[in-house]
Amino acid sequence: MSSKEHHLVIINGVNRGFGHSVALDYIRHSGAHAVSFVLVGRTQHSLEQVLTELHEAASHAGVVFKGVVVSEVDLAHLNSLDSNLARIQSAAADLRDEAAQSTRTITKSVLFNNAGSLGDLSKTVKEFTWQEARSYLDFNVVSLVGLCSMFLKDTLEAFPKEQYPDHRTVVVSISSLLAVQAFPNWGLYAAGKAARDRLLGVIALEEAANNVKTLNYAPGPLDNEMQADVRRTLGDKEQLKIYDDMHKSGSLVKMEDSSRKLIHLLKADTFTSGGHIDFYDE
Ligand SMILES: NC(=O)c1ccc[n+]([C@@H]2O[C@H](COP(=O)([O-])OP(=O)(O)OC[C@H]3O[C@@H](n4cnc5c(N)ncnc54)[C@H](OP(=O)(O)O)[C@@H]3O)[C@@H](O)[C@H]2O)c1
Image (cartoon, rainbow, N blue to C red; front, top):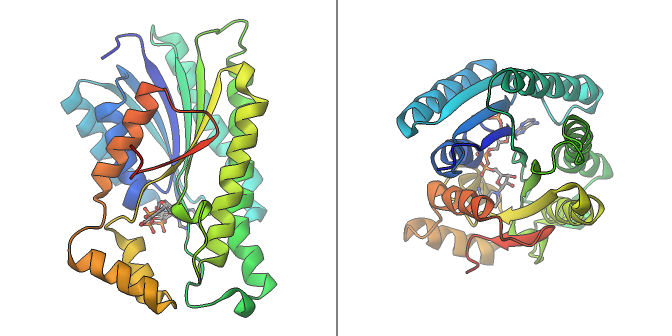
């Protein structure tokens, strides 16, 4: 474990599911000696519970931990996106200031775009209304563009390359096989994940000279609530059988196996920026 590494991590969708697992594994496996977290979500109470868990994990792992909660952030509501982005930015700035006053300067800033929704998997594209498409994309794509743009501007201003040549910036999107392969009934989900993948591909090119890397990580079919929703709502019988069989045979991916793989990829830092990596990839 490096004694010099101090990471500032912003993550959304952290109160349950994959985001929760990623946050815990970041503390356990990132190799950083100190981590400062901004936990973004909708419910104060559940975010505070996660904060307590992260404190415990950090103390167990011997990691210096500081965390703040930015709650009541509904990423589907674009009317409040600007004010929510300002609150997230301010929380990150406070953590940076605190780090600067200690001897633990931030060495890496990471944004995890994890929150996401399925859309209505009972429908095919001809059944969608443009209104539901817009509402889906507002949350899953537009708010992500806002977050990425705020994060990059803020981080690159705080750590200009000339002054901080060793500071690294990473943007992660939790992606899916659907970003690279089409299946029936996944119209909005697939369109959203493909758009997110491509946006991070563009950022990788635009900001390569600023020590910025991006990663689209597809975590595999996870054994969690979202996957249970897939089994409840998916309209395509053929895929439904595959997911049902995986569930019954216990072959869905354990969240902790997938989050550990993601954190190891970030730690090794050998991934191609802007690319798409799947849990099942070698
Ligand atoms: N599960 C899978 O098999 C699977 C496979 C491939 C990719 N993924 C991707 O992995 C990511 C995490 O999914 P998951 O499996 O952990 O799903 P999940 O258990 O349904 O969790 C989704 C998270 O997103 C948050 N969220 C939902 N709507 C939101 C909104 N309007 N504003 C802010 N936050 C909101 C939820 O917060 P609340 O608790 O407040 O609702 C929750 O923390 C998603 O991007 C998903 O597409 C999942």
